[in-house]
Picture (cartoon, rainbow, N blue to C red):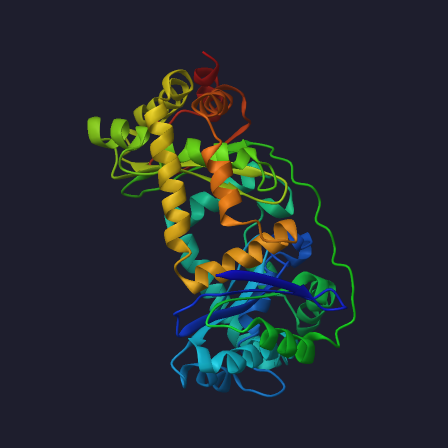
Length: 420
């Protein structure tokens, strides 16, 4: 398998990887325009725009967009994150050109029909309402807001109802004009693809776009803070975030190994101590996520009202203990989990296309898998222990609690336990 990468004169980038033996391909456009690129009055518009892309173009109706891909047995979808919006499809190899044409059409030629805007506005408002009824969604939005208070990175991707209710056709067109330039777009494909053919299609479809620099988002600042809401639910939801490295920092590999060993699987410390030994919860995990300039290590658990205080204090104790006695065996197991998860995931052309796009966005190149594995293998037990000490004692923290949480400790009380 060989990665090839090119760039049009206007800055539009193309990256692909041919995977021998596959009869299908994944292809998509990744745009560096997500939640953190919105001004406060635009909060939620990147996600709204993603929805509207499927509601009709100058050449196709909403139904024709869906039928074009599904008539050949493929699927098409999109998502919005805090740093990117992606439009992608999975098709058989003979239909790559069709998928490219449809994706290019919805990205370049949305008509933003006023009637369709009102229909989709209702759909998104229902999506927001559904998220309010989902404790897992609510608590992570609160945690993000407390971690990056009063910053684009801390706002919800869906946006508040009052903003979504007011977006106009001009607002959507304006966001496209600001952020959908060729230098902000990456065509990524993997599977049964021909790079030269992709280059030709990209030139025909995107080569006419005029270069324009996108707006650079403000540098993120992890602020920390606490959000809690008492509500009559079956479970008390507990989420703790700690400032961690961004994805351009090699320390991200240490952070990911640490969170895997702490709470990344059934053999992890938190799972074994909190669930298996003490029976305090059904779900508990730790994970590390990263952005361009910051990151967070998050611990989440759901438990009963009378056990949330114990769960919270034990979590802090386990974090402190990891700094003292994290073993070489635990680190080796976490490294193996990371490598296996990455390599098994890359057997999917969709995952591989996603990885290619994200790496080009981060580095403007695709580091080899061997380089990535070498960086994972280079993380030592002493590295993980040192990082664990930072997480347990020094790292700025944010806390979110939702449900019957009156007995849960405050962030200040958890900070005191961290420092003890």
